[in-house]
Amino acid sequence: MRIIYMLLCIAGTVLPLSQFVPWLAAHGLDVPLLLQLATSSSIAAFAWSDVLVSGVAVAVFVVAESRRLAMRRMWLPLSCLAVGPSLALPLFLFLRERHLASGDLGGDILRRLPNKERGNGVAGKA
Image (cartoon, rainbow, N blue to C red; front, side, top):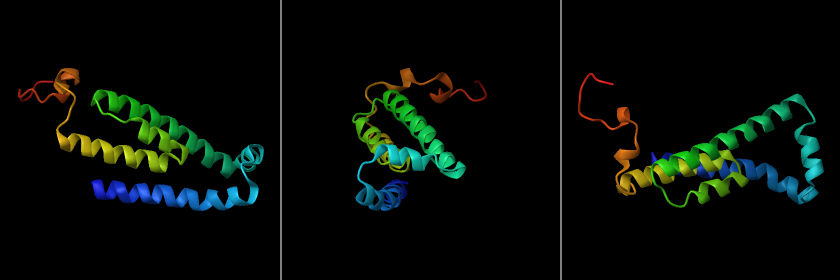
């Protein structure tokens, strides 16, 4: 999965920036123009609102899951939200996968997991 996450990180960086960098070169950091274009049509507003909601969802997930798993460096995927959720989410999933594979779970992670996630060895009980 880590290779897939890295490929998604590359795509999640290259695709958005391939559109934004030429616009930035042509217009500079003209925020009022950016906002005007982002809301100039229903489809543009749809796309931007989807990206904004996805970004908030990714940020909440990164913070909650990083705390739950005692992961360090949660700032890295959060800072990648500047590019977009298309980079931040696969980067976080890559870091999470690597963290879980390392076995560095920040102490006794089982005490912080809900009972049903502990795998308490009792079959048939919730």
